Image: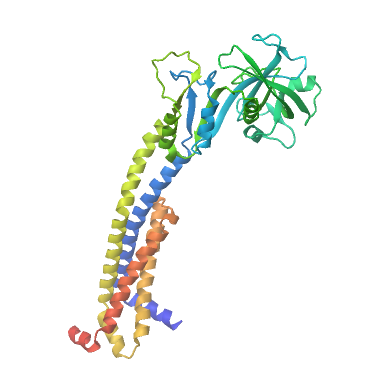
Length: 408
C-alpha cells in the first residue's frame, strides 16, 4: 500500500516528465498500431477474397459457347478430383434403365430394348426449383447426392401411381449409349432404395423426364464402371477451394490435355475437351492486394525495430533526467532494490497507460483489430522497459557524491 502511494506521489510530483513519457508512449504506440493494423487489414482482405472467390473449373465445348448438352470425359473429372486441388461441383449425366414397368418404352436406337431415362447429379440444384419441389423421406437429405449410397428419387406422380412406399427398393438394369449416340449397351442390375420424391417442372435445368428417376452421380458412375462402360456427363464443373492452388490446377489441366477455349473452332462441337476458370476478377483484385501485403510485411521488421529502438532511447533519456533524484534518495538511505522497483514501476505504468491509450484510439477511430496488436505492442513495451531498466541500473552504479557534485 505504501509503495503504491509513493508511486502515485512520484508521478504527480513530476507532472511535466510524466506527461512527456505518456505522450512518447502514446505516439509510438499509435504509429506501431497503425502499421500493424494495416498489415492485418490486407491479410484479412486477402483471406476474404479467398473465401468468397468461388473459383470453378467449368467444362465447355471447344469454342466456349456451351456448358450443357456436352460429352465430358469422366476420367478427366476423376483425375481432377484425385489431385486434391479441386472438389466436385455439379455433374449431370443421363443414362437409361429398365424396371419392367409399363413406363419402359422401345429405344429408337434398338427397338427391342425397353428403357426409360435416369439422370444422375452430384447436387440437388437442378431439381430444387422451388423450396417444396423435393420431399426427402426420414433419414435422407440433400447430402445423398454427394454419396455413393444406392438410392433414388422418383417423380411424385410415378411414386403414387405405382403404389410405392417410403424405403421401398426399385430393381433396375442400367443401359448406356456410346459416345456417338448411335448404340445402346446393357449394364449392371441395381437395387435402389427410394429416398424421396420430386415434382417435375418444365423449368428444370436440365429437364428431368417425368417417367424416369434420378440418383446420385457416384451410383451411376460405379454401376457403369462395374460393367466396363463409360459414363458421359453432359455438364460438369469443379470448385477450387484454395485459390493458392490456381497455378497448380492450370498445370494439371494442361497435363490432362484439357485445352483452353478457341473461339475460332466450330461452335456446335459437343466434346468437352476444353475448360475455363472464372479467375479474372479474383486475380485482378487479389494480385495488387498480395503485392501490398508483401511490401508491408517486408518493411515490418525495420519499422518495428525502429520503433523499439526509439522507445528504448526515449525511456533511457527520460530516466536519465531523474539521476539527481535517484542519487538524493540513495544519500538518504534508500536501498538500491527499492529505488529500482519504484522507478521501474513508474516507467512501466506510464508505458502501459500510453500504449493502452494508443490501442484504444486505433481500435475505436480506425477499426484496427485488437488481436493484430498483441505481439507488436508487447514487443514495444518490452523495448521501452529495457531502456528504462538499463538507465536505472546505470545510475545506481554511479557514485552518489559524483552525481550531487555535478549537480552543484
